[in-house]
Image (cartoon, rainbow, N blue to C red; front, side):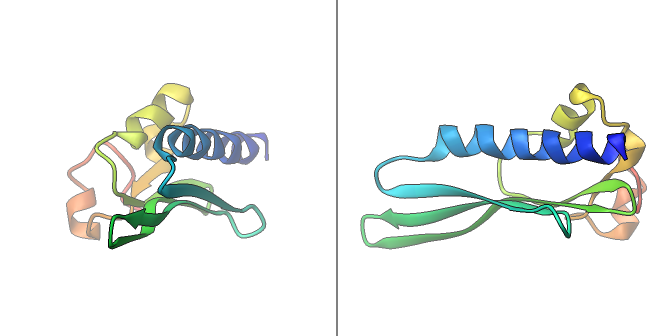
Length: 110
């Protein structure tokens, strides 16, 4: 249970840090934490002149004791950040890659 609590804390920490860096006068960076079902997201909401900005930037889930990176719309290697925080690479799944392609990464297949 301590492992999962650490995972939740580290995911929230990553999302909060990104939100602080991204928010400005025209756009909100919103963190969404569903700690009961282990869904975590960073969303951008706002306007760039006449263009609407709305959508997920980062999406993590915790399933079966593993962190699933469902979406990474940044240039940052958040999987490597999680490893640096203490998460085993075998507890990280790159959910945005097909199951076939996951076998070629240093991370878990599922």
